[in-house]
Amino acid sequence: MDEDRFNQDLRKFLKTFGVTSQREIERAVAGAIDEGRLRGNETLRVRAVLTIDGLLDQHTVEGEIALE
View 1 (cartoon, one colour):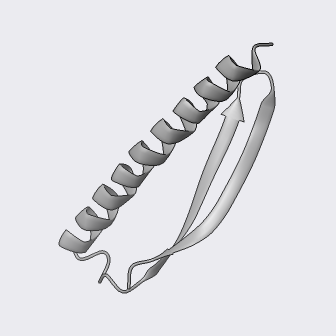
View 2 (cartoon, helix red, strand yellow; view 1 turned 120 degrees about the horizontal axis):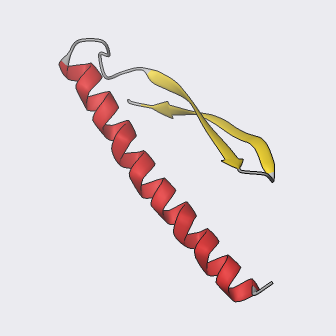
């Protein structure tokens, strides 16, 4: 295995996941506030699930995001 290539591709994937996920969360929260489904002072429970075909069935990370 080429450790450098693996590390580079892994970091690229995680960066892309982080950036795109942040944008989607921001859009979802803004839309929910605009529609009146959120007031903007909530704390949201979040969950991200990672799978790798044939290697990892499920890795789950849970947390909270405070809006205020």
